Amino acid sequence: MKRRFNYTGRKRITREQISVILNRDGNSIRSFNANIDLNGLDLPPDAKVYVEVYHRTDLRRYDFGTVAEIVIPQATDLATLAYSENLKFRVLMVDESGQHGLILAHADRIKTESDVDRKSILPVEFRDLGQQVWRVDFIGDEGAPVIVLNNRIPNIQSIARSDPQFIMYVYPAVIMEVLTHMIFVEGISSASDPAVEWHGDWLTFAKMILPSEGPPEILDIQDETFDKEGVEEWINRVVEEFCASRNEWKEYITQVSVEVRG
Image 1 (spheres, one colour):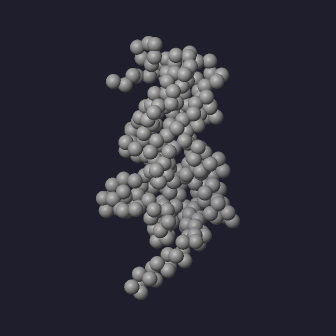
Image 2 (tube, rainbow, N blue to C red):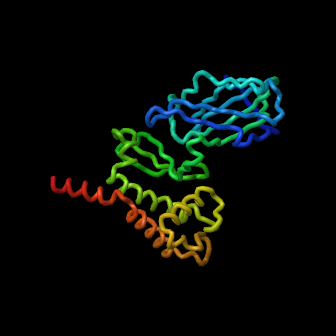
Image 3 (cartoon, helix red, strand yellow):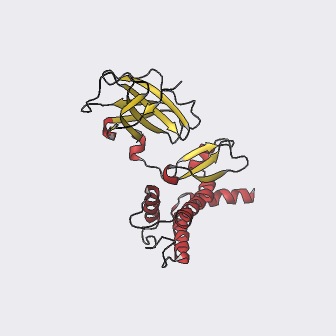
């Protein structure tokens, strides 16, 4: 049975003290390496060190020894997790001398080294969607969007990354759906300083696509001056500009023309 942990009064570990590297086999994540620096934390030397890897309700805990002697496990296998993408990591230092483990220090939502330089605003998951090719689920942090692709489709990972028809059909629809949901369903209190992190990320993305025209100043649907038609027009222009900027357009037309002639 897993030991229960008490989180009261714990210290925080800075992100700079921990680095996590994912080991991949092709496109699949197989395991991870973690380097942990506990200098300056003044923790009991016999406190246990754990690294937890989780995705929603799926969690694995790995024993990394003690504060005095961190020991890298021989196996940090991740292949058995239901979802090996979009994983989150946390590190715990635990006093296990009592009946229940007492958390002395922790760090959560640790980014892997590959994620530090590449922040994805649209994480990808692969699930059985029946006869549906894709859909957007708002199940990420703070309700952030995740694109779910049907794992029953052969080679769907490669198709989503490089197939011109998939890119030109799917991603404009995703952008339209996310921006519409963000503004008309969730609501944004401030266009310049949104309270939700992923709202800010997507507004920045939209500005990069359409730098000549920022989002309307009022995006709060509760505001009396909210311009519904103006916001809808702006979303449409973002999608149009995304399509116009894609190199896949010519390849898409070529593929469609070949199929028609065939």
